[in-house]
Structure formats: structure tokens, C-alpha cells
Amino acid sequence: MLLTLYTRILYCGGFQPPFLTLGYRRMTVIDQLTQRQQQVYEFIHDKIVNRGYGPTVREIGERFNISSPNGVMCHLKALEKKGLIHRSPNKSRAIELTQEAIDAERGLPLVGCVAAGATQLAFEQSERVDFGDFFDRPDLFVLTVSGESMIEAQIADGDFVVVRRQATAEPGAMVVARTDEGEATLKYWHPEKHRIRLQPANSSMDPIYVKQAEVIGVVVGVVRSL
Image (cartoon, rainbow, N blue to C red; front, side):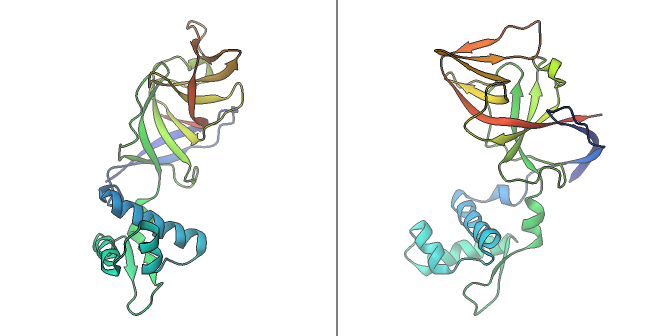
């Protein structure tokens, strides 16, 4: 079921595009695959998108160390039964993505709630948020903001932040960072001598100082429901 809300997209640079429609989608058939089915499907998807045609049974077997063609066929039949691929008989490379598979991948993964404070990220969550074609990249994901430590950056409690997954960030970038204690937080990234300063955008709050922290991603946009 697709629920639509009117939203305003707010870029970190201050630019405010017009209103868009936000689609919030529940679990799809892709989210219900087994781990191996997911891996095989992603391999097929990658070959079709980046090479222009699907892999052969032999290529799939070599990629996943499946010695028997029948073992590969079991996975293909499962994916076909779930409506994600279509295979033409008597053609070794004739694996195509179905429209259902294409539709199921619309939107960005909503991976959890990030505190403008600290929280645990739950990357196993299956919900997705659909911003249409506005943020159409595979390296993006969405987090819900909890707290008010970034309020002076126009990011409020309940907003969505769109994050580009990457392991490094420029000083002063707004990032989702994870400390050694496993806590994730939305802050400005300031590496300093012998420590890292995670700076809130709230003059009433003190920065967080840590010796080590991991950049999970850089914020590229904010979505607010009106």
C-alpha cells in the first residue's frame, strides 16, 4: 500500500525546491528473499543494469561456487516464481527483470532513526521511502531524525535526512557518524588533533568529543512532511 504525503525538500545548501510527493512503502517481495536468493538476484540485477544483459547459469554458478547447474536453476525458479525475473526458454542469457522487480526497487531504504543525539542504526529494516526520481541513486539511504541538536541547521525532530553512504567526509560536513560504543549520531564532522569533534547545530548543546568515530555517510538532503 502506498501512502502519499506532501513534503518540502530542503537541501543542505539552503536551496528549497518545490513540493514533491513522498511515497512510503511497506515490505516488498525483494525484502522477503532468502539471503542467497537476494545475492543471486543482486548479481543478476547488476549484470542487466551495468552490462546490458543477464548472466548465464555458468556465470551464476561460478560467482557463488555452485557446482551443479541444477542448484543455480533452483534459485532462478524461486526468483521467477516470486515474480522478479522472467526467463525465455532455450536462451542462455535471456534473464530479464520483471516490472514488479523494477517497481519494488523504487525509493530509498529507510534504515532507522538517527538521533540528533545518539541511537543504534537498524540496517535490517525493510521499509523504503519513495522520493520519486529526486534521489535516484543506489548509494543513498534515509534516516528519521530524533531530537533537536541540529535545529539551527533547519533539521527538526521527525524530519527525514537523505544520506550518501561513504566512509570519509570533509571537515565541517554534516554526517551520520558512529562511535566506538556503537552509537550513531547526526552532527558536523570536525577531526582535531588526537580527537574528533561532533558538533551539534544547537547553541544550547555541547559538542561530543571522541577519540575514534566512523563516518557512515554524508547528508545530502532533508525532507520535511508538512
